Length: 143
Length: 143
Length: 143
Length: 143
Image 1 (cartoon, helix red, strand yellow):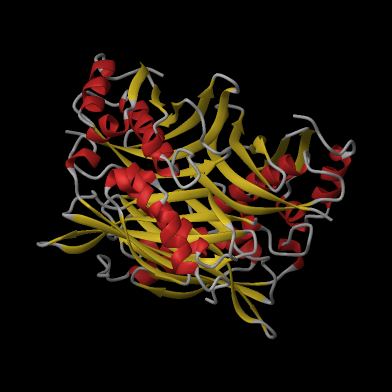
Image 2 (image 1 turned 135 degrees about the vertical axis):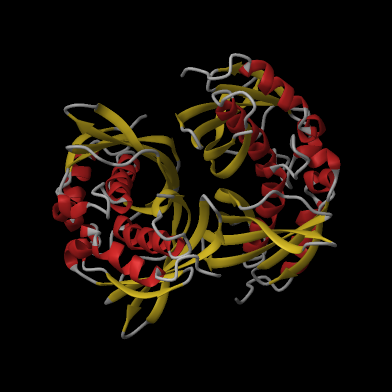
């Protein structure tokens, strides 16, 4: 997909750095390409639910930011992005030493973009396991 | 709806206390009735996205826990609950002094329950504003 | 909710009459209020899946049209409506002598509206049973 | 993915033939592999909405059947399949001479399977265009 903003990678990195929640949970921006974003998150016990798995809301937090920035990477300079809706299927318990989500734009529109994100758990023993998948709609607000 | 577990309120409170993420973000369990759960969350700057609004993932975190516990409140003693999937529509920017989500079971099944949660922003000026709504499926694991 | 188009009921009825699929499956427009639409559908064996229940796609067909027209009823004169996305939870087998869906706008926006629809099966024996619920996003295209 | 039922292709074909709605709309079962199903549908004016595009409910009808049968192809002999929920994003107007949906199982579980389906419009001029995508949950009922 062709980016409209030649500085899209810097724009994504700058906005990511301005999301305090990413800092709180320890998420890192790993990859930014046109229409593709990866965010990773090391396991931390304070991010879990009652069984010690990553809480579905935390899984969603990184997947949603990845989807938003994947869409944002294809938007014109000066745009803002917001999440319209998303749906998450939780496939397996989110247990691992770290987690990574990869979002890819399915369709980039002038106003609405549809994005999909997979979330993987990573562990020394089990390797990379798909634990959740998101399908969502992101909106472009032009300046 | 008729609870199968006479101690459902204590069971929900106990499990909620075992979700470290609720403590990290500062969420509180406000109400537990049969099939209904409310969770509240005071605003904190470190829970926000790049515009200062509560991140959609945090909105989802409290809504998902509320849905899970609303379903759990109707499950037999000794059950465990897990989220199968949810869909969230984000209706307005999540800005306010605090937030509250109210989840209600739409259909309680033996294995699967469907639950809906609304999330409201609360502020001295604007009162109570609906900012998001979730529709999800929760699963009962019997011991 | 306040309608922007004083002739909204006629506009909905006219558009509904122009949906050939409604005629094919035998759906009827039963109620149009500002932000609320009901569509009913008598049972027919040729609308079913392998167990004799109404196919989930047919359930979705009437729910989607009801959501679209509920949103459309609040749009300015001359607008067009299209479905952006929807999510459907199927709660019980769709069996009955007839079916009715009631859609209500949750949030009407300038561009996007969020709408919810319940679908009920109706039978002489069992009365009215909730069989499915939809949560979706509808878009306004201005002329 | 490994099929548990060696006769899965025949089982899918037999169940598909028992869905009267597929006959009503003119859908055909094109492909059955383990975890993958394709269904096609020629354009017909009586399947459209007010603008002459295939109604989103018809798009959903073929996508849901494809998802259900993709999941069913991996279930043990004698199982039945039902749709728990699905979410559909409508990406472009569904216009074309015919339509095809391809469903692939994302995760096959003992009770629940998650399946994704893309729906394409096909026309002599524009070739194959993605018009919708579904992410859903299918349930296995054992005999």
